[in-house]
Length: 260
Image (tube, rainbow, N blue to C red; front, side, top):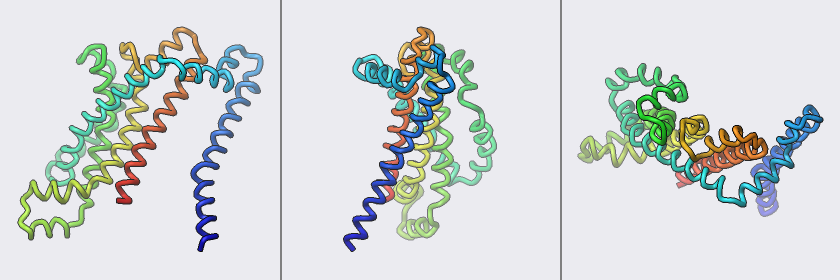
């Protein structure tokens, strides 16, 4: 049994670390070939070379600027996600547990869900002004729909036997909701949160070009205007890294919940 366990752990180590590392190395090699091969002789392409961007990343990481922009962006992500949860969970519970409300709202919700959050940018600025409010609105609008749909799916997936058991024990509607339905939908809710975080992160960068003076989207716009292309590419990589870490944290919470 011990050799089998040992080989299994080696296989898991390979799947979790070795192959992803090789994939990142291959992607970096293709990036290097694109710059020094297809873009050889171009001063503009040289500014986007991996070695140039790597030095810029280290310089930015050593200073406070990029971290201040990251802090501003992450705060907006938190605000948008909290608003989306506050709106999406009650709506999802209503859609999943009240068939009449589901029939009444499903077409409208599907219609609104298919509108790109970025198309609301001019309307958000006209209604809320320039600054934090329209950015948070766009993030919340993007995040609310996966939460609504996943919570509703979780409610509809609750085994009728549990509801019947709660009825036989004399539970009222509110007690059934809090002691049966809510614990049962937690995994679905975490799936919705993961999807919501992904959408928020995609919408965040263009939304932060709405007149705010801090944030990763603002940083990208500022580096473009200053023609600091090495910093621009470093900012793009930093956005990808933070988004990956956010998704990893949500996936970790989802796995922990499922194992518990």
